[in-house]
Amino acid sequence: MSKDQGLRKGMQLRSGPLQLNFSETFKHLRTPDAYERLLLEVMQGNQSLFVRKDEIEAAWKWCDQLMDGWSKMGDSPKSYAAGSWGPLTSIALIARDGRSWYGDV
Image (cartoon, rainbow, N blue to C red):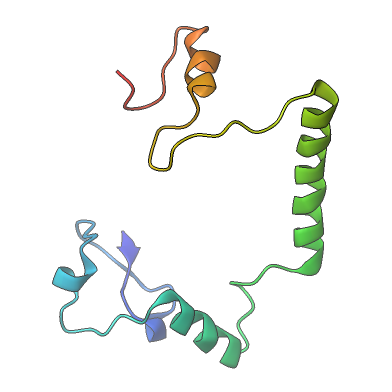
């Protein structure tokens, strides 16, 4: 099941294979971009796509705890190249348990 394409269809579901090439699958429909959809939701009074103030504060509280932990350990987030699988330390982190990241063979 997947959501039927279109703003006016709400959460109407349809049965069928998952087609991720929207320009081919839905040639007959105009697909609004994300910003256009967001503006439409604002005008319709739908707040489901927006985060409340208390949610933002809770997220920053969580992030602050991570940053405090790094600071106490004298550590920081590891840099890595855009488009890569992440820092080499992430590979070592799970390799010591005999595991690997998906796709890392």
